[in-house]
Length: 227
Image (tube, rainbow, N blue to C red; front, side, top):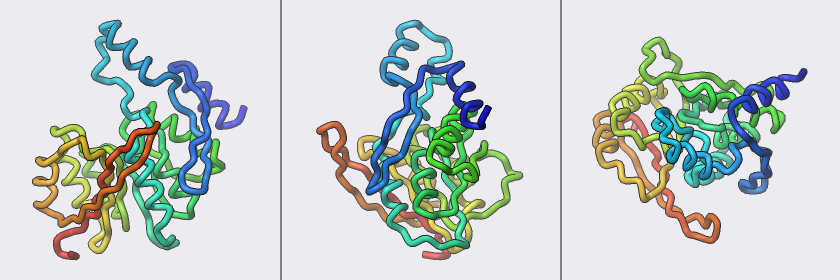
């Protein structure tokens, strides 16, 4: 049994899934996702599932991920630069970046998310892509990265101090962080926390998804000392 078959068997034991084509830029990715995601979430809510707070929001295809992936694909590839994706979910951003030639490590704290990310890496011919669990509170994480990227990672206010602390100790002195989020998700307290250590610039772009315009914000963040 191949690694992909083993991973798909693990995923299939917990979730009903489907494989879809996903076009970003000029590339078409093969992506495994939860089938009928919205219905899956609604079913758990209506069933009064005690674990509904653990609903797999990591499994959603967030609009911000499309913009961040496309943006990274347009950046020059620097072979000696090491990128880190945080809160990767099913791995769209990191997989696309790797296909474009970037050296990137894909991480999440959720074990199921990592399974999906691994399946998606294998489906797209990226058997060597580094995919691993990452806990922002782990002080044993001492590696520094030339760039850290993440989409929709600022939805939980309780995580802001932890996230900013992690970013501060994990970004190389002259590195850059790229964060993407939907404009409808305000996070003023995150940026208040962020500016204790960093400076940032924001750009906005409109994406048309399912016939509707979605406003996505992209942030470029650097250490204050390197601004």
